[in-house]
Image 1 (cartoon, helix red, strand yellow):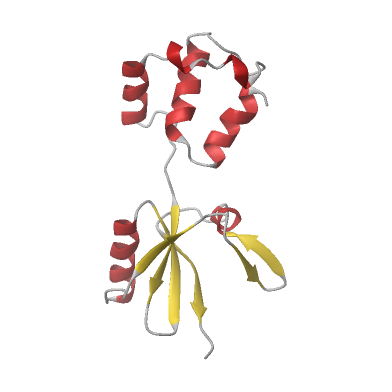
Image 2: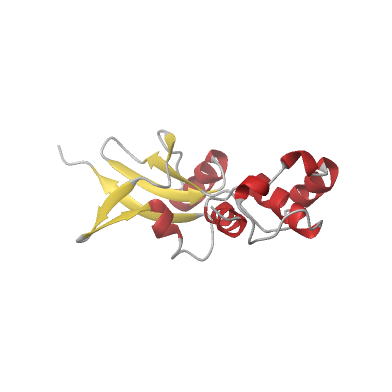
Length: 141
């Protein structure tokens, strides 16, 4: 795998720390995008510089999760948010009640939407602002 591919994966999977390390090594010309990832030596990273980049979120990477919030004994809403707390706060403001529980799901979890199967990661690409409702689920009993 090439450095360029790993760097792109960092953005796709919200790997902020690694992305900032790679950025720093690129800026210091210790690696290039065309190098094999075996050339990455994290011992060459200036931890203080990278910590400042991460603190200021220089690359604009935000962790985004998907949370299932239980509305009642049969209904759930899925919310994209940066944290469980943000998901609960968004739910409370939107529905004017507290959820019964809140669980994080994997962004790679797949579900059926119409006639297609889609992951939450792919659904997230269509959403412009966060937090946001991804959808609802009603159990049939």
